[in-house]
Length: 236
Image (cartoon, rainbow, N blue to C red; front, side, top):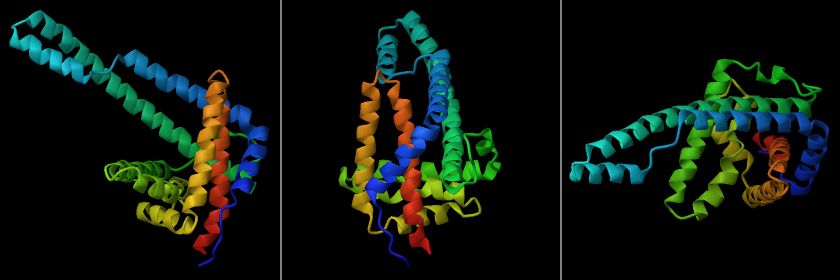
């Protein structure tokens, strides 16, 4: 197998160049997605907290059925909030997959501009990319129970799996996760370093009246694709 190493400076430089050229429109997409998902949560109502559960128990204990009814109404609102969160997650997933496809296309020359054609992917591609992202997320959450060290080792090795799935829609879910693991072999600390730099970029974005965070998301998107393009040669 080939031995390609991640050049962080090259990835960041590439990301910056593409962000300058295409970033404004993609940042608008991120902004709109944030507005839609945030709006869904607001419309559906507040979430049902652990304090509400405790309050129900206390109200039942003292026979205060009026309070129970009021809290039960809050429970109905929490169901709506969960539904809103679910739809928001679906929208975010669809847009993320399409933006991966867009960034891959722009860097390969398949696309020459920001276009909605990037959304024209088979349903199976969206589904498999979602499942890959979900599995990776579960793995990282589970690793948190074994202290944070495994997270810092696993996240850099698996973060490219959804991108591989988007570029290789015929690949199986397990194949995508395995490919991400193989292509980042020997590059764990480099990928971690890139992630820390991108975290810093996001923080700077928040400092720019929070609006800059959407442009920071664009830089992060292209940085991941640049890293992916550098490392996918390790699969040959």
